[in-house]
Image 1 (cartoon, rainbow, N blue to C red):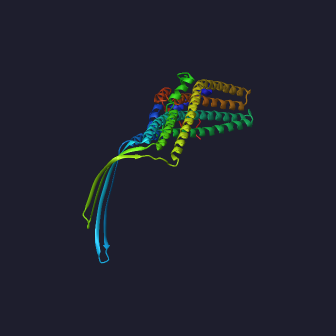
Image 2: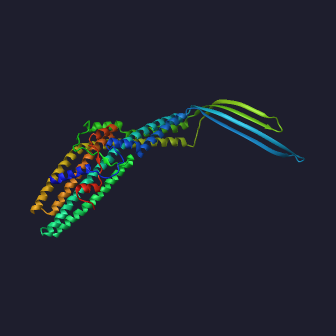
Image 3: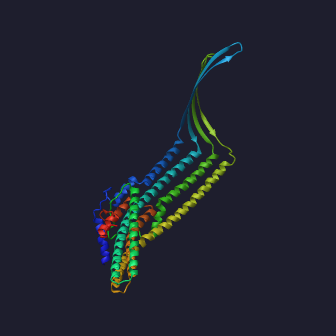
Length: 462
């Protein structure tokens, strides 16, 4: 198949061409991209800092059980005159005071409920971190494969443009010698112009996809490792949809986060119910007071006070019972949302599992469609040469062939991504799965520009 071989030669030429673009990053497989993104991705860094922030809530809740020590001091001076009618008297007063107080909670019910809530908050933050990290791994693979898909699309678009250009030139030559009507020239010219526009759009799309990868990794890449020609098409292990659903219900971090959020809502009920329960605190207080004046002798007092303080709010206008009811409703809402997420995990896990299974058949079907449309294109071209097919037939089959190439290339990336998304739904996605995906990559090759591709295709530059 001459058309297909030309595409392969064009692709090989692009991968081996020495395009004059600056090198920003040297190592360019998916593991290298993952390492760069782990250090640079701002969304991942924000998730990590959110985890660190939430971990402090447990320390703050624990601090409520420990003693509180406070100190107060003041010093004053008074200077004035007294008027007795027959004369005046000047006076001066000085006073110094300080107090140190220690308070140790003996029993405050809301402190225990708050500590329980804080522990669930930290657990939720840990689950949210797992959600963010697994999403990060999927985004790395998506951005990586989007660049590869962009390269494929640019290669196919340039090759399709080149094929349409040749059809247009042949139509002009045939028209000049009277073999075809002017309508053939117009039709091939319109198709060629559309192909040129598609090539420009493909280059812009590839540029944006490279930028998306840079936004995550903080680095520009001038080369990247493509997929091997034949990827392994294997079903999920275990190959049982309900098994994956069970794993997801146990391990999905989004579901775990929602579960811990519900536990927090339950703990808040206890915090509000603490309004019914008395508090008991121990306190120790040390006071010092010194004063002096020009009229009276100096006075000094040093005292120590210790005791047990009992506080019980008997009535707050119904506010406490209202807050308890509100917290109970919030807890019921949290349970409802937990069930929503549980059902969503079941649905998404099943759909993603089906996507992996269907992806195997799709890749095989797309590959066969590429072969079939290529054969149909060659047969149509041969029919056009002998006058049994029209130029419109050739252009239509040519368009179908290049779309088949794009669909086949995209189906391979989608199949591999669905494997990752299935593990993401199950909550078992880890770095090692990116490592396994990396084994499906060939040696790194240069990312082509439209100028590079045109030179290799022999189409010149516009």
